[in-house]
Length: 543
Image (cartoon, rainbow, N blue to C red; front, side, top):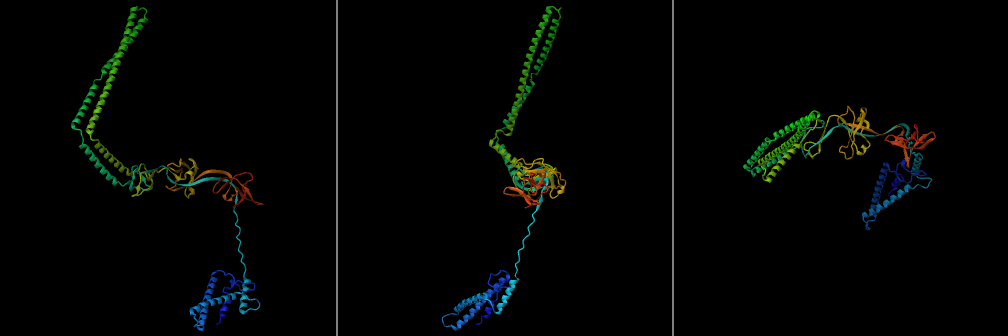
């Protein structure tokens, strides 16, 4: 068979000319193959051609052996397998021969053409250098003098200052909600209510139990009519005794004793004047003076007797008043006795207890029904409604928030640690969110006292005429301020191994200068004005 077509095919490179690797003499050599899509397709075609060639050659040789060596105990399949191995070996030898260059001098025409083409590719191949990225310009900053201010920025809602949270005193299921956010309500208006069907059924049952207990008490009483009559007579007798005691008051004796006392005092005064007059007249005989003196002594004795009589009458009158009070107490006691007899006092204690218990059940259910309705305690506006019909609500859960329409303020929720940087009376700037033209001065009105304070909100008073109810308010409060100081942006400051410095541009080149920092904010850092540091106007190279 003629295999020159296969050798000729193997002498040609299977790669495109521009991808062939050329040796010094211009002949193609075996080398790694670049893995692009065209080269991969060429390799696939090469391997497919080799496989088909091996199968074809093996088939030819197998047929040849089967014809010339039949009858020697070897099957056709065996011949084909052996021929396939020899065909593969043969193609491998041809491939290696095609990749080895000749020794020099004259070559076949086909080889000289390949050498010439390889030399042309080698001469035309050039190396493309990788471009170098231009060095990025480093930013520069100028040392300036101005104000460095540390601020705390937060936001709040524009809401009424005076608010009231409303809740039910008992648990239940919401039946109706009569208001919504923004509604204006008046005192006593029904805002929401619970379902009370079950409570009303319980009340009817409790009233029935109460009536039964009362009937049992009345039918099982032990008091008869005679006991009631006796109590009535005792009361009447005590009232008569009281009236008699009042009528027998010794006021006449007391009055007579008082008049006698006044008369004795007057007689004593007259006797004293007569005695003084007798003594003052030298011409009066001794008997006249002695008579006047005796009359004075008698008047003194009569006055003492009148005083004793008055005191005795007064004591008797006081005793009479005490007797009247005792008689009044007797009347009150008899009235109580009659009331107890008429109300069934003395009945079976168990029956009485049953009546009291039934009445208590009725009162409790009535109170629960009353507590199932929520009424507006003030005239105001509804800020929040936290429930809808059908919701189950626990006792004292906030369901509605009411507020007085005026005044309004910004109410913010801050972490307690942030509130420690603020103080009541601190002045800042407030503005409607994203409306810088509305900025006005504001002041902190209230802060939480501790982390356990029930109200953890920060209250900020301001005048924002165009702010909507519930609108977002931006608040800026200055914490620390340094005026007329040197400052740089944080990007200009460098640190290395505990050293803080900047790179200063000078006519002689860049120079590192140590700096001391003061107040630091997000956009400005205070540079302390110390000897050997930077000065205003220095140009600093950033990182």
